[in-house]
Length: 480
Image 1 (cartoon, one colour):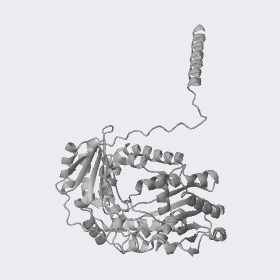
Image 2 (cartoon, rainbow, N blue to C red):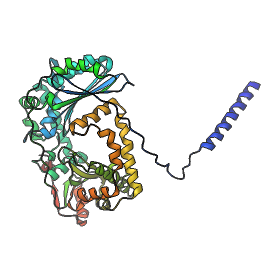
Image 3 (cartoon, helix red, strand yellow):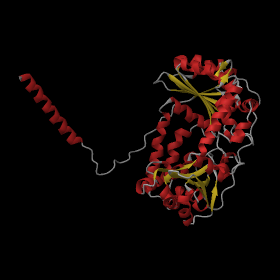
Image 4 (cartoon, one colour):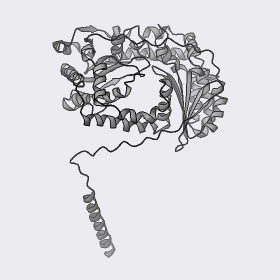
C-alpha cells in the first residue's frame, strides 16, 4: 500500500513539475513568429565526367541512404515534335520500356521488380527523361536494362496499339471532364492549332491514329543521341565507382548525327480580351483559366516573375487564393502560373468555382489581376522572397529531387552556379522590379477568358460583366 502511495505521490510531483515547465515555455500566440534570416544552402558538389561516346555524366554523392537515382535527360520533348505529328515525342518516350534489347515489356518489368528498382520513361515539353531508382548494391544489374531502354527500344507493334488505345481513351474521357477539358481548351485558344503549344503533349486523336512503328523509330534515331543528352547520377556512389559501370553499358550507346528540329517559335500575342464558354450541362463547377502568351525560361526577368507570382497566385496565402477561397468561398483553391519553356509558354490564373458564383469569381480574378499593378508593400515583398529562398533546400532532400534539379540545368542551359546564386538573385528583387514585370507581363485587358461550365446557368451573368466579346465553342473545336 505504501508503495502504491509513494508511486502516486511521485507521479503527482512529476506532473506538477511538467506543468510548471510547460507554463514557463508556453508559446506567445499573440502574433506570428518573426521570420528569421534565410539559412545558407549547401549545394551538393558535382563530379563531371564524359563517357567515350560523348555522353556527359554528372555525379552527386549523397551517402545517407544506399540507393542511387539515375536520370537521363534528352532534348526530345514535345517541342521537338515534327509539324503535323504532335504527340510523337510523348508516345516515343512512353514506348521506350515497352520492349528493348532482347526483353519484352513484361520481362523488363519483371527484372526491374526483382532488383527492387523503379524505371520510368516520360516526356515533358522541353525534354524526355529515363529515370532509374535502384539500391546501390543492384545498380550494376540494372544499368544494362536502362541502356537497352534508352538505346535499343524495339517499339513492338502490339504494344504500340495498346498504348495508343489507352491514349485515345484518355482523350475521350477528357471531353467529359471539365477540369481536364479546360487544360486542352486554354492553350488551343491562346496558341491556335498550328503552334506546338496549342496542342497537349499527348497530341490529338487524329495524330495518334496516324503514328506507326516507323515514325517512333525515326524520331528515336534522330533525337535519342548521346550528344543530345546528359546523365545525372545522385546517390550513394562517386564518379570513380559508377563511371566504369556506365561506360560498360550506356557508353556503348552509339548515336549518329543528331537532327536538330526547328526551334518552337514564340506565338503572336493576344491583342484584346475575349471570353470563351464551353458548355458542359450539369457541371458541378465552372472551370476557369484566364491569361495569354507568357514568357520563355531564358527571360532575364525570371526571378522578378517568380516573386511576382508568389504574391499573386503561387502559394496558399497568395492573393488569388486568399480572395477566392478564404474571403469569398467561391473555390477550393485559386492559383496563377508562368509556365516557362524554351519558347514563351502560357501565363494563366485558374480555379474551379461554384457554378452560381461564376461571374462573381471572374470579377474577383480581374480585381486581383488589376491590383497586382500597384506597388507591393515591403512586408509582402519580403514574405514572398523568404518563401522562395526557403523552398530551395527542399530540392536537395532526396536523390530524385537532386537528379531532377541538375537535369534542369542541362535542359535550360542554366549557369553552373545557378543554385548557389539562387538566393542572391531572389533577394535582389525590388518593389520596382515586381511592378515592372507586372506591367509588362500581366495585361488583363488582353487576356483570353476560358470557362468550361453549364452554359444555361452562367452565360447571361458572364455577358453582363462586359469583359469583351463572348464566343461559345465546343470540346471538338479545342481538341481536334
